[in-house]
Image (cartoon, rainbow, N blue to C red):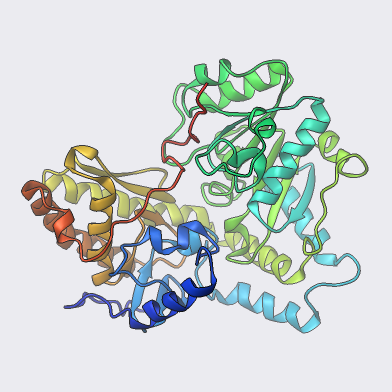
Amino acid sequence: MPNTVSSNENYPDITKSDELYARAQRIMTPVTQTLAKGPGQYTKGVSPKYVKRAKGSHIWDVDGNEYIDFQMGIGPISLGYAYERVDNAIRAQLEDGITFSMMHELEVELSELIHEVIPNAESIRISKTGADVCSAAVRVSRAFTGRSKVLCCGYHGWHDWYIGTTSRDKGIPQESKDLVAAFEYNNIDSLKALLDEDVACVILEPFIFDAPKDNFLHEVARLCKENGTLLIFDEMWTGFRVAVGGAQEYFGITPDLAVYSKAFANGMPIALLTGRRDVMELFEQDVFFFTTFGGEALSLAAAVATIAEMREKNVPARLAEQGKKLKDGYNDIAAELGLTQYTKCYGYDCRTIVTFDASAGSPMEIKAFMQQELFKRGIMWGGFHNMCFSHTDEDVAHTLAAYREVLPLLKEAIEAGDVASRLLGEPVEAVFRKVTNAAPVKAK
């Protein structure tokens, strides 16, 4: 679709967004169902809070403002909003029904497809959310090994076993917390220090933004195998993006178990657990993992259509191509302005992050300043380039032109030491998750 986004003389009118927000605050605590979509992640007082519709790579808020979206639903939109092939598959299935009293044939069709594209998928389970399948993977690992401890690296959802390693750990029994510890990405010694004969599984994101160093992922796999510990790849972000078969295809590592959500159904709620058949067979009788909506057919139809499109059109290559233009372009502009000691864009090309060094001032304030100026220029931005197949050359060109306007403003604010005074609203808020790939290590 043609790019109709343009730079505005004024900041977006967010009257309706603020009205909805006021209504929500009276009855909702908190107002958001997804932390990364909430008002705390956008510059309060300047940024829109509620969206109305989206198409391709563009999104419209409830006040009618249009933006190029680089959040992409916080990950699930891999092809683009309202993508015709996927939506047609959903409409066709809707004619036949959504949820049924017996299993649906699409459960078999999708599982056969997953068996073809994901290297470790000897056996497949289907569920609804990433947290579900992460927790199922941990439970079956404990059952298979007869061990209790879990080691993690990354973000793995809201369930007790993981969230107890973070600052938002109220309501989690200490006994549960004591069984889980976090290690640091690219620090193999931090894993070795925790790995003992009672570790059932190691679960990690194969990468978030940093690339593995010194054969890190292969060393993790080797240590797990030697210790009789199951290796779980959390591929919520890497699956179907860095390659259709995910990080295990990309790096040539076959984990014992792997979990997926987000990208492979272009926005519909569905998740996968794949793995060794001898481990997964425990779900037959010994380990309970079932949900009413696991076989919901609209999401199954969307997943089949999305994966077919990814394979036929080599979607991961396009994500990398467009993402690399943004990453390199941002860094080139920063270099021209002498800002490389303060900011950079890095990560795998399909999903990159813009970071700000504390030597320039508060990273949260700087991010908020960038965000408010980019919203003014028609870009929905949270510090990431979450790429989708529908991001056009025009989208990339407009975004780089906006960076070329905004980064000099940032340089001026940094040199004057008054970033905060240039904010028209409140800074964005930090969350417990670190972008260094590791959950906070618990105090001893």
